[in-house]
Structure formats: structure tokens, C-alpha cells
Length: 332
Image (cartoon, rainbow, N blue to C red; front, side, top):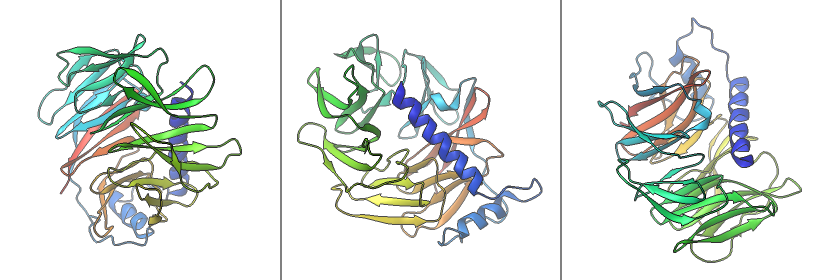
């Protein structure tokens, strides 16, 4: 789908910029010293960047699948990796459980199960793969789904070429936003869907719309590259590629501030703390004091997705042509 390709293209561009802006590692340099230098450039405390030893991550699965065509989700201490034709239930200390499902593109994990589109309908599969049930008829395949405790929504593009955000009203689709501009980067926080809207003049705004009612609301327009993703569970968090800033936006869209300057962060994920990948490896920034912790040196493996909660951080890495792995570290 067009928007999915744009998302992957934006992620690839951001990773390319990260590599070109970061220091080139000499093979003889310790990874941690490079990490410390990178974090120091962020103008924040780096006292917890390790000087020698790093905890080795636990590798949960390796697959002959492109790391750029998968989705990752967490359910407590269980991770789910979604490919086009299967879900993998990942638990530390156990073999991966493969659940064969026609997931296509953009499935999402909800409180009730795995929501996906297939054969003209939205389906829900139980988290253990034991049952699958039809949720609603939907002729147009979504670009991808998003979810929160309040339910789920999705992005699609109809025959009229309008980008649309939709949710369900009972078993019938309900259009929340329809626009000729390009809608991207959906994220759902409680009852609200947040998104990026790029207008025909290439200006863009961040918007929000209630999942069940109301009209969309927007920030002021701005220029430059659009955020590749919006993240966060209470506030909207995103990476401003043009300014190399991590920014936080209030849920009502009324206030915004720079949370971290001069630090390449792609991809980004906000849980209790904020997690950033860049050429030096994977970083955690503590929410309380924005202190940098270097977690993992990638050995030239590119991080493509990050998910975290208060106990663990998981990420997918591109380990070679059409090869991926999922790694995990406990959050201390």
C-alpha cells in the first residue's frame, strides 16, 4: 500500500541520515566510548553510560523475513512479532510459538486479541491463536491499525483518493477524518487518535480526533520533513528530523516543548522512558532526569522497531538480506 511504503521509506531515510550524521566507527574503538561521546553531544547527563561491560540482550527469534515488513507489540512480558502470514508469540526462556494467520499488512494487538484485515473483513484472533472471529465487513484494505484500551482505528485510502481515519460504530465503519492531504503516523492514546496531516503545499500539522465523536483538531502548520512516527502513551512524542530534537506535545495539542536536543533518534519509542536507536546502538533516556543509558551496541545490525514497558525493552534488527531477529533486555 502507498502509505505503508512511505512509512518504510521515511524510516529508511531517517536511518540513512542517522548513519551519515553519526561518527564512523573504527573497528578498534570500543562501542561504549563512541556511545558516551554521542550521548555527551546531547547536552544531558551521561553518568550511566557504561565504561566497559554491557548486558547481552536475549535473542528471542531469528527469521528469514525482512525486518521492514513486520510489526512488534507487547502484552506484559510477552512480545508478539507479526509477519504477513503469521504471528510469533515470544516469551523469554521458551521457544517461539508460531500462530499461522493471514495478517497481511498493519495488524495490531488489542486487549481482546490480534486485529487484522483479510478477505474483505476485519478479524480478531485470540492471543494464543486458539480462535478467530469476524468483527466487521470492510471492503477496502487498511494501511494499518492502531489501538489503545478504548478500542482500535485504522488508516486507509478509498477510491476517491481521500486519506481516511476510521473506527467502528458497532459493526459498521465510521469515518473520523477524510482529507485530500496525506495522513500518516497514527498513534492512539486513550480515546484519541493522533496523526500527521501533510497539505498540498507541503506544510503539515499534527491532529487529533476522538475515536467515537467530534471533529478533528490541529496544531499550527509547520514546514520541513514530517515525523516518521508519533509515539507515547500519555503525551505525544516524536522526533523532529530537521532539528534533531525529541519533542513532546500535550494531548490537547495546546503546548509543545523540546525534550532533548541534538540527538539523532530513529526509530523512537516512548514508554515510561524514551528509547532511541542510532548508528552507535540503542539508548534509553530516563524520564525523570533525561539521563542517557547506553543499552546495546548493534555491531552493524540496524534497529527497525522498538517496543517497551516498565519492565522490558524489545526491538527488531535487520541482520541481513531478508533476515531479522528480535532481542530483549530487562529495564532496570
